[in-house]
Length: 324
Ligand SMILES: NC(=O)c1ccc[n+]([C@@H]2O[C@H](COP(=O)([O-])OP(=O)(O)OC[C@H]3O[C@@H](n4cnc5c(N)ncnc54)[C@H](OP(=O)(O)O)[C@@H]3O)[C@@H](O)[C@H]2O)c1
Image (tube, rainbow, N blue to C red; front, side, top):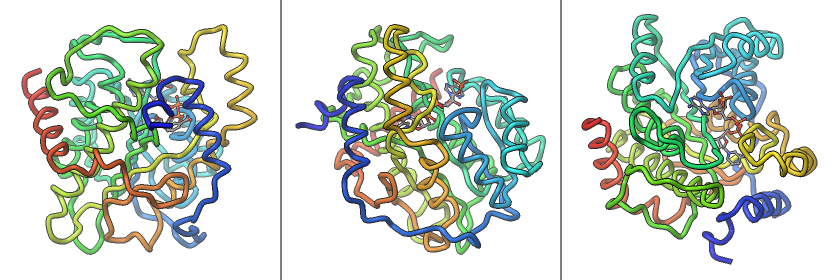
């Protein structure tokens, strides 16, 4: 089956995600309890729910100061995370990734608070029921799942909130998906142009935006780390996670989806393992460009590795943001 066919509708995407869980894996390694995050500041987007919440709790349990960067769940999710982790070193900050101006305000807040970030997990994503034109004129899923992360990651680096450091490189981790292996090439002719779509196209577009995210991760890693590793850039697919990701699915499918998620999908606490590994493992110090699928290291899709795609994507994204 082609990759496009594997991920082009919710049923096939779900089935293929579950089948992956039963395939033999060669794990990259195992994290030890002494691989901690004491003294580190970690930021997680979309940390009020699902995988992001589990990551925030486990980072706090390993001693980090955790910033939960969320558009909702403030302050409840933070209070819950404090209680679940047994750490008070957690704060919530507001950012709406479907609003480019909200990102500017968020970065300003980080500067005012004098916060620097050692480990940044770009986790937030949305699976909507169809197209949604935001105030900026861009589609919501395009913004949340790709363009806002491009903007925020660059703003954090350019404002020295994430500081390049040879020898003790900070880490940026992108939560992608195996669905980035779509057969579709990035189309730069209609890049960012709003087009209407319905539920039937959502999953294919989700994979398409994950391809953009993964291509950006590879390009960012290359641009920053021209000789020594100054910022480690990693990406991963957590496999199927029992989360709120399908909350916009038609109501009629919800009971079935909830059943499948509960029985076959991973609990977010377990699904967080590759994220926490990429954040903490001493063996990854000063490495960059790695992609994990569950706990196995893999090469990203060849389209994401293509330097021409990386360059064009960077320039097209920069232009959209500049001209906005
Ligand atoms: N679930 C899976 O099977 C699966 C498989 C592969 C990859 N992933 C990836 O795993 C990551 C986490 O997803 P999840 O499964 O944990 O789903 P989730 O429970 O729905 O979490 C998604 C998070 O993104 C946030 N988000 C959505 N729109 C936002 C916006 N405009 N501004 C800020 N935050 C926003 C959500 O906040 P709200 O609560 O406010 O909506 C939520 O906190 C995503 O990148 C997803 O693509 C998931």
